[in-house]
Length: 362
Ligand code: AMP
Image (tube, rainbow, N blue to C red; front, side):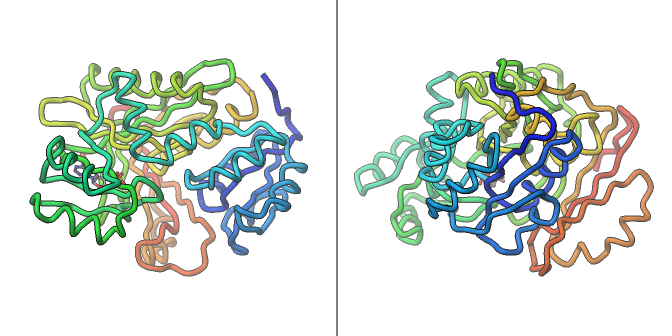
């Protein structure tokens, strides 16, 4: 165990809204944050103690950054593996670069889960003409072709409706390594945000339901209305994954619920997650504080919810209506301090709170 006490510094790779909310949670615990990001106007810079602007491949800048912090973490999964490795030679990096590298690759991620008996969407690797043919045999169509790396919010994905479309779809994705996933006719998308401390203690926030529009999360309903059996199963999956990775920090597990009530793991995020934003206002200890506690070697906080919540992302110009949201009852407004409100850009979110058990069906 290595503990960062109040007054210490947490280093965060990545300066988006997740880094910003991590830094704000750290400040509440008397910890400082140093942020490393390539963009000179990263939103997290506005709320941290110090920052470095440099590309992730800048070895000297990484070393300088590491010297000024007590522990390193990250707020997005596409941190180049080399950066995590350089840093881990100098300071503790949590969660570990090993977990990061497995989760960065959809094929490795799903294989890791499958090898541990966790049910995922059906999948196969495509990295050659031969494996493309094999994937057609094992997964077939309709299906979704996804780049193995660097995809987010539906980017790097193609729906393949018929076998003869697959080769063209792979060409469109420039024949980079991909996975072909069976198209799941799910009833809804659910996720669990959970944390594991340095002592192996696990804390799961409530199972939530997520609604997407144009592949971007629009709304999270907390808690998901689901039988206890489904909630327990989701928490079991998250707990199993955290243990298998010997993970320290917050992880989100996104799942599809099928018509017959089964849960299929779609994606793992090795970080705080948009579907956990409601915890800032719905729980005594948010996902952000929980992550900081875990990486700083503190005891985890109680993840239980004191209110039901509906979290809605404010995308692009929607954030211009901040005045209206700010006057809503039981509504918490979060704005990320970003400049340009490009369409689809996550500019902020609002969380409406309800007494326990009284969340309306949105
Ligand atoms: P992902 O980037 O894997 O989280 O996928 C983005 C979104 O695409 C998901 O939230 C789903 O709405 C949809 N999607 C992804 N994979 C599948 C699948 N195998 N079957 C059906 N829909 C999918």
